[in-house]
Length: 223
Length: 205
Image 1 (cartoon, rainbow over the protein chains, first blue to last red):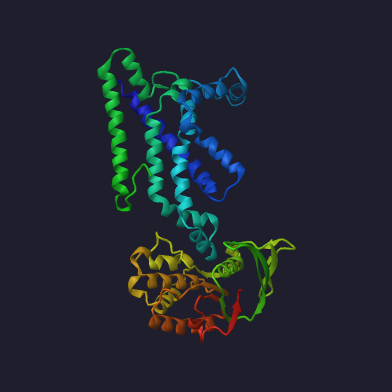
Image 2 (cartoon, chains in turn brown, yellow):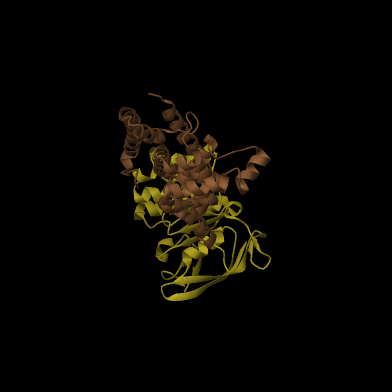
């Protein structure tokens, strides 16, 4: 059995997680502070992948980044970057597709912290950044872990969106979920079963780890 | 000297009303603030600390303008550094007793003294969830004092303390306030408990 789709999937999930953590923490913090019509619209856009069929999202990403049209053409001509049918494209699609899974738990955990915690820190002369690092972040640890695991597990299982933007190029865009589909198409059920079992096992271990880590707080990964 | 003259709109269950407070307070003075629930006592403290912005007014502390809505000056809470004892304590769940004080100051001798005043020396490694209500309240007071603030704002600071502990702590705090020259505003539902501590009073109707 070719293990490359598994490594590619883990690499994709890892990179997506790191990028989403870097983007998600400040954005979730900003969204958790007060309401405005702009924030509501942005939140709705970020949440769209939760309800939109992955193939629809993949189709629009394919159009947007196609080297024959607008933005994709400009990116290729200016920076020599091509997102369609490349690993970079998979990362971009995964970041967009999994964003609500990272942002949702973090934002809701930050909103649940009493505002007086930040105020107490400010009154001690601490900046917003110091308050975020020393007070807010440590107190949302269970939700942060939940967000990381959900994002990782969700990226492992992506199919429609990665197929649309990445296709099925061995060692480049052929991730495990596509390898499963490909094997079934070729009636190779034992290979499909092997890929599926590995994905199942990784996801199960991740979810159980969150349950164990959050045991004392009685918080399930689905909260 | 602290000069305060503010107007802030309040939304209460009785409808909209305006909180208007004006007064001058000597440096080192202790003022008790009382009035009915929803009158705006906590709001007043939060405006002074810089957590809330009033529609109109100014606050001048020792000739430094903290707030002037006309010239659009409003120092952030980090620059005002008014000590604040929150009604809900606002203790940091991730920090033990000693860490709360170390987060506020690096002065180890001052931390030791505060721990002795609050009788929390034996509980330094305990996180808030393992402290009683009274111990949590004392920690909230100590944390607010850790920065040696010029101005201390206390919102129902003694509500969870038993009478003996309250009397002992008030005695210690009186000495400390005098030593630091701290000006203090204390919100209380029970003004009698502050007899002998506060020389001024401010009634919010």
